[in-house]
Image 1: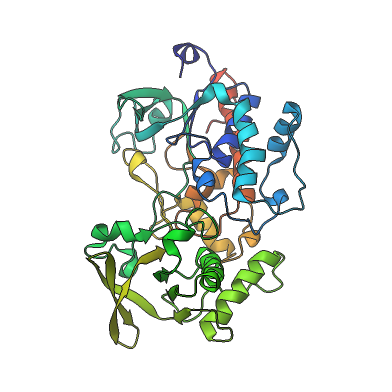
Image 2 (image 1 turned 180 degrees about the vertical axis):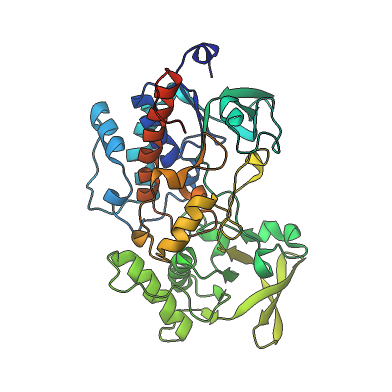
Amino acid sequence: MSASSSTTNRPRVAIIGAGPIGLDMALHARELGLPITIYERGPEVAHNVARWGFVELFSPWRLNVSPLGLETLERAGAEIPDLDAYPTGRAFRELYVVPIARALSDAIRLRTTVLAIGREGLLKGEAIGARERAERTFRILLRDERTGEELYDEADVVIDASGVYDHPSGLGPGGLPLPREHECERWIDRHLPDLRGADRDRFAGKRILLVGGGYSAATALDDLARLAVDAPTTQVLWIRRRAEPLPPIPDDPLPARRRLSELACDVATGARRLASIASEGNTRIEALWPDGSSVVATLRHDDGSSVEKTFDRILALTGYRPDLSIYRELQVHLCYASEGPMKLAAFLLGAGGGADCLAAPAAGADTLLTTEPRFFVLGAKSYGRRNDFLLRAGYEQTREIAAKLVELARKANGSKAKGM
C-alpha cells in the first residue's frame, strides 16, 4: 500500500485473494473510496478458477454473479451473459471475473503470497478483547514470488478471501495423510482433471482408483465412464467411506446437480452399471506405497477385510480445508469442527442446509465478525471444511462487510457511529 494512504483517515483495506469474492469485496471498498490492495499469489486473477475452467457449473449464471459485478461489466461495456445459461468455469472467469479485475488492475498485486498477519506491537496473547487491538495496524508479511523477496505491508482492515482449493485433505483415515503418501504424489491427482481434454491421455487405458463421495467425485465418475467407452482398457475402482454418496435433494431445483446425484447413487447401489467401473462403499485406504511405475494401495472394508490392489493413477477428491497458518498470530476464534470463524460456523450449523447449498441462509453482518477486530474471513474459506458454500453467499457477505466498512470510515473521520 502506498505511504500516502496511511496519512489519510480512510481505513486501508487489504484483501487476500483475487478470486470472485475477493474482487467483489474490492469493488465495494472502492465504491466507498477506500484505499485497497489485493494480494494474489497466482500468476493471474482467479487462478484456481482457470484450473477447473473445463467444468460446467451446475448452477446458472444468475447464482454466480453479483449486482455490483454486473454493474461493473455494464460500465465497462462488457458483454452481459445470459443469466439463465450454465457457464463453464472458463466462461465464468473470462466473461465475468477478468473484466472486473481490469477495473481494479491498479490495486492487484499478482505473484504475491501472504505468509503471516499480526498486529503492530502486540503478541497474540496480549490485549485480549481490548480496544487496543483495534487501534493497532495489521502487519502483513509478504513474499514476491518473482524475486523471492520478503517484506512487510500494513493495513487497517484485512479480508481473507483466499479460498481452500490449494489445501486438499489427506487420503488416510480421519482425513490424515497416509504413511508414505508424500512418496506417491506423482500418481495422485487432488483436483478434478480434464478427462475429456488436456488430461485424457494420463488416464486413458489406466488402472484408476477414484476416492471420494461428493459432487466432484460424481463428476469424475461421469467423465471416467465416457473415457472407458472410448478407451476400453481403462479400469476404474470407485471407493468411498459410506455405502451411498450424495443423498438426493428433494425437488432439487438444479437439474445438473440432480443428474450427478442420481448417477452416483445408481452406480453405488448397483442400479446402473458403467463400462469398466467397479464401486465399493464402506471402504478406505489403509496403506499406500510406490511400486516401480505404479502405486499399491491396501483397501480396508468396514467388515475388517482388506485387499491390496495396484493402480496407475489415484484421483483423490476428498475435500478441502482452510489454511489457518497465515493468521496464527491473530486472536481468531475458530470452530473446532469446520475450522471456519466461530460465529459463522455456529450460525450455519444451527441453520441446517446440509448438502443443499441453495438452502444455506444469508448470514448477517454480526455473524461475520471475528474475535480479531477488523479481520474478516469471506468466501469458501469462511465455511471451513463445509462443502455447501455457494458464490451467492459470498456476494452477500461482501455487501454485509461493505456496511461495516462504512461504519469504520465514519469512525475514522470522527463520527460517533458505533465502531467495529
